[in-house]
Length: 127
Image: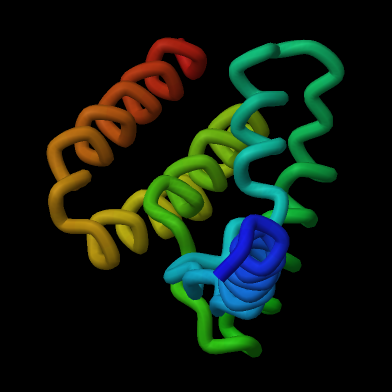
C-alpha cells in the first residue's frame, strides 16, 4: 500500500467516525426544565422580578411537563412557593412546599425551615 492509499484510507476512517458520532443519540433528559432556571436566576438577581409572570411561566411549564411525561426538576415547587411567599399567599406557599417535600423527600428539612420562617414573618407583619 502506497502513501496515497494510506492517506485516503485515513480520511475515509475519519469521515466514518465523524458520521457515526454525529448519528449517536443525545441522552434523554429526565426533567423538563422549561423556564425554571431563568426564573431562579431572576429571583436571586432581584431585579425586575414580576412574581405573577414568573408563577404563570412555571405553572405553564408544569402543565407541559405533565403532558410530555417529564418529571419536574428538584426545586421548581420550592421556587413557586418562594414566589407565592413574596405575594403573601400562605395557602399556595404551604401547598408548593408540601409538593416539593413529597417529590423530593431530601428537601423536607429545608422546606419546613422555609415554611416556618414564612409563617413567622406573617405573624410579625400582623402585629
